[in-house]
Length: 259
Image (cartoon, rainbow, N blue to C red; front, side, top):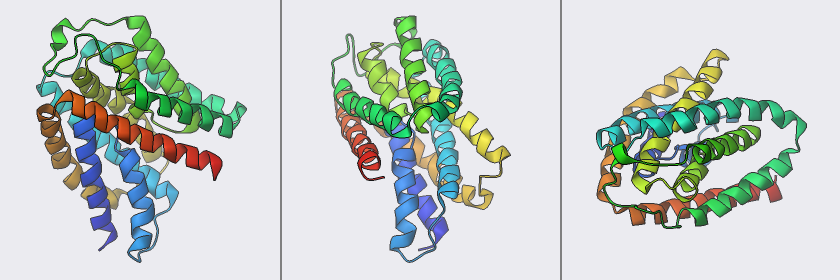
């Protein structure tokens, strides 16, 4: 097994998860890139390289995932603007403010929010269905802005995207149907991922030769994941999301308790 095949495998799995559940693939991509090369006897990738590859894969997966879900009419343009801009701007602010707040305290807050999100995702949404009509979507704009701003600010402070927390807040607090939350979240995260990608590209943190297997694997995997998302009941999608969010929360707690 070569490093190219490992990156391709990680991109394949992460792309499918992104298309299926509407979250960034970093929750899957990063651990594979960190541990698998060592397990198969290869030179480990540095955290700088892993971060660059993860943001690249996340951008590609979210961009194409949003495109596929848009074709299913599960992406709301109004939701995108009301949540995309706040999370984009507040992520930058959070990154700046992180210098003035204890990192351990921030991680505890973020891990607690992630754990709560795994339960919030299971709260029933009024009018939720297998085929919600995005053209008649009604939501409170103030709640959408508050949810996005909160996740963006806290996520920027701890260096986490927070997309896996945003979907539960969209369904439980903003009261957006599950399928529209999944599709719209991909569009929203594309904006944040693009900013992160540009920052790393301009500072020379992207290993461009490794982006080839990412593109080859992520695009078709995201398409297959998006098709599967449309076919799987939204109830099961919420359950899978709850499990993955809980795993992410536990992983963050581990980084707090055993840094």
